[in-house]
Every structure is written in C-alpha cells, then in structure tokens.
Length: 280
Image (cartoon, rainbow, N blue to C red; front, side, top):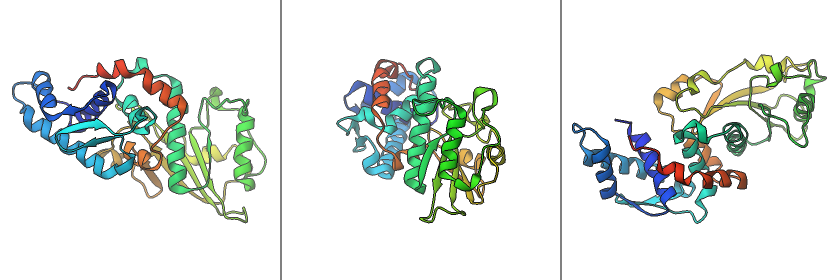
C-alpha cells in the first residue's frame, strides 16, 4: 500500500480535478477496490481524512481545501492559482505531463518567492534555463549578482559550465541600508522528482559559485533546499546541516500560497491527467 501522505495527496488532487466534494464513504469504497484484501479500507480512509485535517490546521488560509472530517471540498474560488495544487501536480503526475518550464522556471520561481518571504531581501533566479528578455548571456546574469553583492568585484569567468549554471538555482541577498558587507546571502537548490530528489542538492559547493567573482561575499551564507512534496523526518535529516533550511510543499505554501497566471494555465491543463492518478 502507498503511504497515507501519498493517498491524501491523490485525494486532494482528485477533489480539485473533479470540482466536487469527496466524502469519507466514497474514499472508503475506492480504497476497498484499490487495496488488497489484507488492508482495512475503513481504517485507511480514516487515517487519510485525519492527515488532511492536520494539513488544513497547519496551513489555515493557505490551504485551498476545507474538510470537516467527512467531506473534503475545494475552498478557493480560483484554486488553480494555488501553489499547493501546483505542487500536487509536480509530485503526482507522470513525467510526460511536466516540462522544464514547470520543473525549473516555475517551481524555482515559487520556491524563490517563498524563501524571500521567509528570509527577506532581494531575489534572483540563477539556475538554468536562465535566459530571459533582460538576461541574454550568463555574463548578464552574473552582473546582476554583482549588483546585489557589490564587494564581489569583477567577473573572473563569464560563461556557464556546458551552457548550464554554476550549480545553484536561486540567490537571495538581504542588505543593510549601508549596502556593505557582511550581509545575509542565501543560495538555494530545488528538486521536483519524488524519487530522484536525493541525488539533487549541492551540485557544487558555494565556493564554486563564488569562484566566478574576484572576491568571496564576506557575508553570512546560508543554504536552502526546496521540494514540492511533504518531507518526512527521514527526508529532513538527509538535508539537515547547521547552514541548511528545507522548504517542502507546506513551508513553500505557507510563504507563497498563490502562484502566477502561467502556473494557473498549466494547472488547469492537467485536470484530466489528475483523475488518472491512482489511489494506490
């Protein structure tokens, strides 16, 4: 049997996709058909509803559903803009439905916004694909970094390794008004795969990124790691260090509950696919 968090995710995703309430009895009946004979469908259904209610309590207004213990329904009028539902899609849908635009640009931007709302400061997405209308070359991107951290000095390297990036996805810089070091600097990595995230993280040490500049930042540097699913204790321990903060779906949604129009359009496009995600 899949774990209770996974089944709860699927129930939430189905509830949004159908646009109608999902009752305890419906869940029990579907679980009876999906689980083996050795499983108690009623007990599993109760555990799922308890999990959903704990999520509701944790996220409060940032949670796009409401549940009274018997029935789950969509609460937000424009739920397709919910970061929570976007993260459900990234966590549950087969890879063929998810492009680099969602895995990289959109999720990294959301994680960056959540980190900014938590840490403060100015934000910049520094991971590939980084090209935009304003940033045409990697040198352009690195010069944006120097604008945020002036004491880095001149660039020593101006091209990304193999056309990609220097191993980090997001940069946040919180300055004092004097704009002098030391300042707070946060470097972040993001991973969307529910199974392969363990291989993602510190692709390089921060020193490799700073080697692109004439001077190190001379600042307090912290790291963060973001994923679109719920991290259990084992997952948190895998990323635990004195300088690392983890952002899972709940921490991201707490700090960035609503997403962009581009995200909404992709979320809307996945309704039919969402209903194909199995409970078990």
